[in-house]
Length: 257
Ligand code: NAP
Image 1 (cartoon, protein in one colour):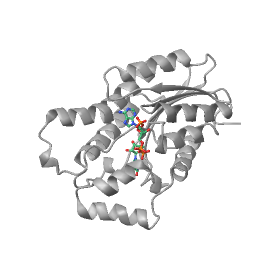
Image 2: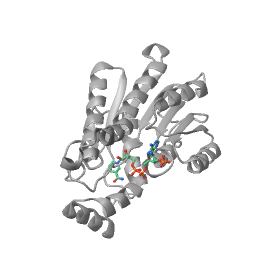
Image 3: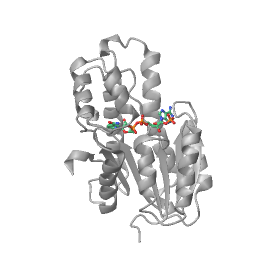
Image 4: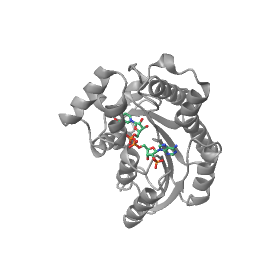
């Protein structure tokens, strides 16, 4: 029997990488007929995942949209609410979608407010508004357990040269979830930093990072097979969520546990 129960599980960035791994792993830990809301821009990848989940006894909806567009968090909430089975016991939101932004340039080159706003709009505002929307759609009075996960990074805590946008966005997201944990004691809130994952994002890091030492460091990690598989990091996330002992709002790194 699963410890999560019958779940409404909303995952952003579910089309590939860590988000896809979360969906696949969650399906092993929830009751049959749990509902998965899979959000990303790549329709084919989402539909493939949806079919895989259906084969393991889950319900799933693909929500093909660009989270950087205004109104997209509201649309996800609306679809999740409409699709939610009446006997749901637990709502879990994984704010996983994210981008690096332009990691080739120094912070002093970002003079365009439009460029910075556009980055923060997707990487911070959409997660902020989606989380708020989900908590409003499933208020405390609904009686369902509620959990929100922010897929964070070491970059929320530590500065990396030429990663100004990424570090800023991750730090802001962590703080938003920490504030939320203070305000909503009955909501379980986790900032999980998954470690260096062998995904498409890492390829961008290896090829586009402007700081030569940092770029080399990640190239070495790749060549020496030191990057983590998404499955391995996701297993730790599942353990944390299932044990449910973390302090709400805490930042926990893969290497901490
Ligand atoms: P990834 O392979 O690049 O996947 C990113 C996901 O975000 C994809 O599903 C992508 O789907 C989605 N996405 C991107 N832009 C979107 C948009 N505008 N609207 C909707 N969805 C969008 O990245 P990953 O490595 O799995 O990273 C997942 C999370 O882990 C991110 O938050 C990342 O910051 C964090 N993280 C990664 C690492 C690492 O080493 N990879 C380390 C620490 C933290 P579509 O392209 O289909 O839209």
